[in-house]
Length: 230
Image 1 (tube, rainbow, N blue to C red):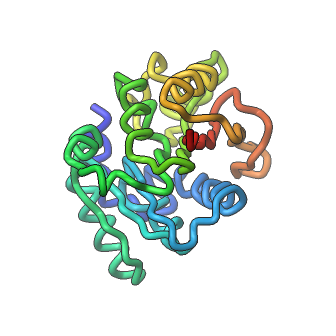
Image 2: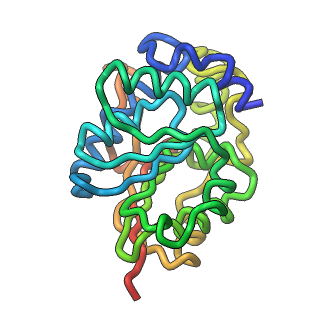
């Protein structure tokens, strides 16, 4: 269902008032988070579930060498076209992440940073995905995930309000049982030799109609994890 939604709306990825308008408003905060905590210049970064390339282009602007993957062929075509128009060199690939992880050689598995923005809440086996993400990281490398907490307020805000009352995203985009508590995510990561470096909320200010970075992780949050060297 979710992939169908993204395929149907792929042409509107770069429309700031279109179906992905909330992602447009999140992206500058994600970029700011990366800039503050990771020196991206010259780093090899894998962006998983890149969609139309909103965050991948932000990473390129920070000086990273970006590989960006998505299972949606329509989205990858849009991402490639926009990168060419904006003169950004990004290695886009249309492939399922688990397939990509299995196909990589040991030499290729060494990314400095792996990012997954609003992706992990759309998959069934989240522990397996985090395991595969960790396997692609160099020792000392970083994993950055942005996702939704599984709380009553996130159900009301992320599904009831966003999908049914305000129409910010298409109905059926999210499934509440796939929302991931920070404690669960960190425990999965710990099992893969990843340590927590930063946990930060991404909060919507209704009065100002904007997202801000905050200490409130009850709905959206960003987590920065680092792969231990030993």
